[in-house]
Length: 298
Ligand code: ADP
Ligand code: MG
Image (cartoon, rainbow, N blue to C red):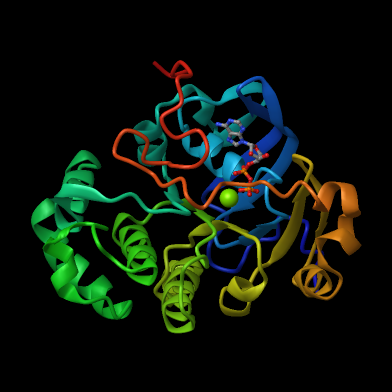
């Protein structure tokens, strides 16, 4: 096996896209959460970031996509040579970054179809082709097609919401996708459907994929049973403390975080309170929902 911590390319993807996170430091409310994160994700690669609750996994996802309220105190995030930290979230999306939220937002009055049609138009795609594409994606994911025209995520089960996120990924075809706990709130069948869909997308174009690069943030190993990781990184105390191949996830399953990173780092067990859900005002949700911090991007 090749060294999984290097950025070896899968054949056929030719490494068209690369997300480079270097020395990233960020905090919220005067508290530093990310203390120097280094990660490189190339087309076709799946990198898992695993870590105990409260280790900064969602913070990393939010900072990458540009959620307002975080203070970036150092480092850089560059996608194909473009400085993402200087862009708004929608500009980052247009640059090719996608975030599947840990808690997908309910948006009354806007359907999945509306959302994707608008996104496709904004990206300069022919929006009249979108309807058929959405239907095909729904079928691949075994998502009830009636949900396509219902208000986005409203009254949906956890599994249906995550299928919605995955469907958006399939239609929008980003270069790099960040998946924040795709496996939370999913039953085994829905997890398999979503993971297989994403895995297919990571394949080279010649094999029906788009060479998607994935940063899969997860607490548990079960996602990785379905979505094969090329590299596994352990985030603890706001920094990557270990990197390795898929065997690192198995080691974690055996030893737990305490065994791998020590009880101090494994014990910071606050994390995103489950009760805090995203709202339209703060679609990222999480503990900062509705927070009064100035928008650093405004
Ligand atoms: P994870 O996703 O790994 O469980 P998070 O990134 O959600 O962890 O949180 C990391 C740490 O940052 C936690 O201690 C959390 O309580 C804290 N945190 C996150 N957002 C805020 C906020 N808006 N205000 C204060 N603390 C926060
Ligand atoms: Mg989280």
